[in-house]
Length: 416
Image 1 (cartoon, rainbow, N blue to C red):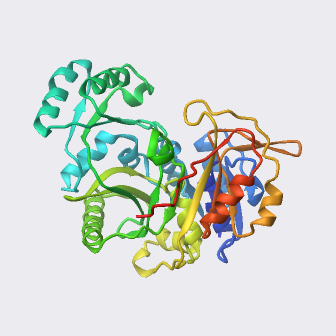
Image 2: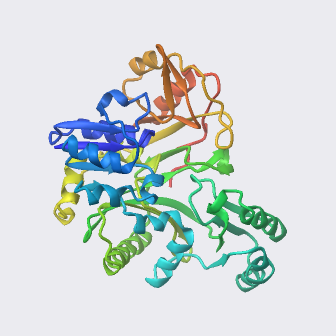
Image 3: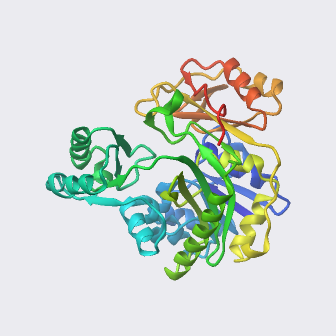
């Protein structure tokens, strides 16, 4: 089987690595990889999605896997499918469950999926009417604000004060994130442990992976701004009462997708919070999460490409996933200044030596480039370090020579 992996992050790196190890693979092609893992497969150069679709036919691609959210929301799957390319990823319509928080909330409400109460703010005039009424109705002391569109994990704000929330609403509506924040979702704040639940959908069956947890806040003790994720681990231990609720939720979600005539094959990420009133769905991502994927695929024992083939053939009800019985961990190494203005261009000096020293730590490249024989940082999140041994991950990163490296030093100490 010829397979194409689209995307440039650590998530796509581990996807490509897992697929490269499959007995079902004939040739592996990579679209938009970063320079850290481009040698895992054959590079496909293209101008736009239509050109990529033509190249897929030229190279006889049997299956394409789309990693990032932006190409999904821009309709890459629709175009590849129109050229006869089987693709793992949500089509443009169902990608809206991620690209519009408001669309997702309306979907949840329609199918009675447990979620927080919410209000939609379309204009500054709504702040003194709909927003104020919402605060009074639900007696909110903490207010959650979410930009409607895609903001790369940075469009969610928790405000402890009504006046602060009002000012933040004005900033968002003024276009802090461009068109993505021209509409804002105001949501009831929830207390509880958050978990990530990633499932694969084949059009009729929703197959859940292990419960995982990521750490979105930049600083220790879960303080600071939201990021794309500073680390993750799996599995998360969940009480039976919540497991039963999650099972019921998955049935509802599967039925809802079938009712909506969802005609895609792809991953759905459910961000869940375990409250004293039961589980609530916080958000959807229509893809594999990053960095949860790194932890999950580290733990996965079943051939990953085999799973995707079953999905392609709409046979997910016939496969059982096998996992390592140990916890797997992923630590993100970022550049100082992330997420706002990361410092880039630092040389990563002793990676080769550390990989020899800590053979049980796998390194996946998120944002790197090569200049002559030097490996340089090239974005906010630079590396993902994965292992079943969290202590060795921290030994590895402590010894890593990389001038402006930044990572959280408190991860995995308290595990749900």
